[in-house]
Image 1 (cartoon, one colour):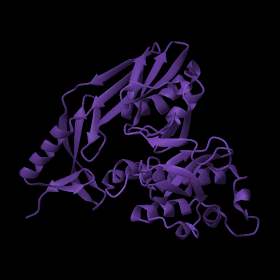
Image 2 (cartoon, one colour):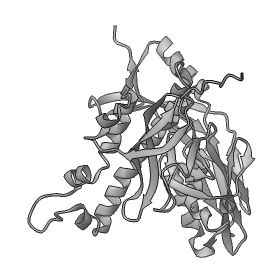
Image 3 (cartoon, one colour):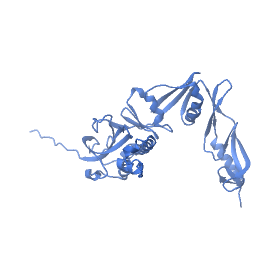
Image 4 (tube, helix red, strand yellow):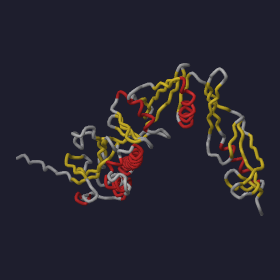
Length: 360
């Protein structure tokens, strides 16, 4: 007689998960759901939209992380938004819908929501990749985030995975003589990404969180979601010659301070002048008294000792309209050594670049 194998039923419990969706007025939002999950971390189709007064209905284990992220989400509800942005008074908007009719107020609301969502995604990222590894009694849920592309999508249709590497980019500016051609090469894990060949959504601006395929990535360094947004529809941005000097000052120089840039059609030179310490008399505005001011001179560029910038970038335009970008890199280690020497010979640092002989 063949004995029947006993079928073991997997334990199930509700887990807190979030659905990302794009609201035409408010932008990207994340709503919480209770999703029935088994002991292997696999989710079912049994899911329920959560509200502040219904969380306890599903016996979700509310750790400090759960409580904190739920608090961030609560600030994005319509009731909380109206409490924050609807100002009572005659002639003032009386509902959130009326607030959103004002372009300035709408921008403020969306910026607020963008910051809240960025923080939530950061918390989910850390919880998934770090705290999830600490779970010993059961397998950690495979996904905590899902994407709703269309209203008809079921909650569990598009699970998202948190990428371990960040989304970086190389900026390229080519000056042709008639215009500037601006392109962006996104990279993640050392591999290039073509944004126009994949399903891509820019979820938040700063810090930037971007969906590529079924992965959610955070932008690297000082990159923001706005850097990538134009390249979802085009591979090249053209800047006409009449605007190039303003474009250099307002965007290219700023970009070169913090990102990797490839340049064609204009010179980029790093100034390698040996720094010279300069100590001169000045007026200490903090104490309304004379004091010494310490600066460091690199060629024709001078930095106050309390200036935290590690470099300075400027544009030089010649008489024949050639453009040169000059970058001065500071030797912060050497500068710190010079300040230590001043202290060793009896000088006292007062702050804001001011020095005086130490008082016994």
